[in-house]
Amino acid sequence: MSSEKVDEKHDTESNGSHAQTSSSEIDLFSFHEKRAGRLIIDPAEAKIELGEEVAAKLKLSADGTKVLWPQPTDSDLDPQNWSDGRKTLLLIIITLAAIVPDFDSGIGIAAIFALAEQYNTTTGVINNLTSNWSIFLLGWGGLAAVMVIRRLGRLPVLFWSQVLALGFLVGCTFAPDLKTFTAMRCLTAFFGTAPQVTGLYVVTDLYPFHLQARKLNIWTMGFIVSPFISPFAFGFLVARTSWRWAYGIGSIYSAIVVLLIAFFMEETMFDRTLKPIPLPTSTGLRLRIENLVGITGLRMQKYRISWYESFVSPFRLVWRPHLLMVLLFEAMLFGFGIGINVTNAVFLGSPPPFGYGFSEFAVAGGYATPIVSVILGELFGRYANDWIMNASIRRNKGVFEAESRLWACYIAIPLYICGFITLGASFQKHLSVGALVMGWGIAEFAIMINTVAVYAYCNDAFPKHQGEISALINHARVLGGFSVAYFQVPWALKNGAIQTFGCEAAIIAGLFVLFIPFLQWKGSALRAKYSLH
Image (cartoon, rainbow, N blue to C red; front, side, top):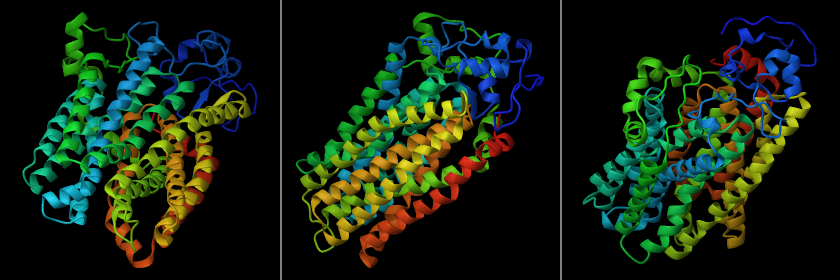
């Protein structure tokens, strides 16, 4: 895009003077990417900043109160123009697919005691050899997936990754020995994680800016609640029959997701900035198959970034200060949450004085707590994030600044601290089940609120790199969480659960104080200097 001629209109903006630009000098389809993290939402403000001529060309929301970013084209192929029903179906499918990786990983938690008995070893060996390493590979699988997505598109990577993950999960079901089971479980995690990076792409492909946080809330709820669904559902099953049935039912769920992707999912990658926009050469069923298996993606490669650029893009992004701080914060916050999920089965199932001595049925029932709290977090977050966004736009005279997303962290962190300390006290002092439920539930509620805020902030700050952002956040939370199971139980055994969970809460509080206020103070300057356009 050519350089813009600046004409000062007023000096109310902290970013400096506003620019009035002629319509010949601005590409509306990429404008939101060039102004990473700062979007003109109010049509009246658009007239002031961009001029009457450009503002008249902007497409607005149905009620006429918000400028749409990205700006939809006039093509029926543009996902932004698809019907609400069509978009909702795709959002449901990608959310169901996002459940798969952590759902599959969580089956091992439900079956941990049965697996130890089957393979003649201890629950610690099962956790360290299979659970922790499969969690670790979830992050690397996401990075690999996004590198291919940038070249071939969303749909083929989503489809083939889930086909492979299904195959390896079937391998887990019938694994004759621990080595085979470990290999199958790790490969399932590596290939299955693609929906957890594809989802952010799909949401931003389908929905304009002002609806994205609400839709991200739904998709995020899917993968946050997923590791609790399998211990909850399969804990009852494993108590009555073989652990292989748990993996078998998990395989059936994965097969259903694969079929939904094959028959109903659509390619949402639309190269709106190309001139002219390439049109498909096939139609009907043939186009559908070509999109699904990747033939269309292979044809479109010539219009997209190179394999080298696709490979280095996450590494060019990760060191940006305003991203790196948020990644470290989220890695620890979500990571300790992963640790709770992996180790709580041990805390609940171990006999007193260390644990609660719950039966397998009671342990399984306990996992209903985080499921309910994540759903409540989704309901709260959908309204809280919208309120924060609208309040920010009003305060900034019609302009949205990405850092306003981080106000949700101020709600999440006190709840997180309260939840972790209550959970630690419950384990150490053997408080009532009510205290245990409240601590665990409040912690997961906070994780849900904070994670949506982090995804929304990073997406707004790097609007051209949704896949890399999603992969890096996914990788950060996994790196933060996979090692927790190694030290959490031994630490609690030696020094008590209050110290363990209290120190983890203190770490999060410290990172919050160090990073979040600073980002809100200096975030716009950091974006101007370090964002990739």
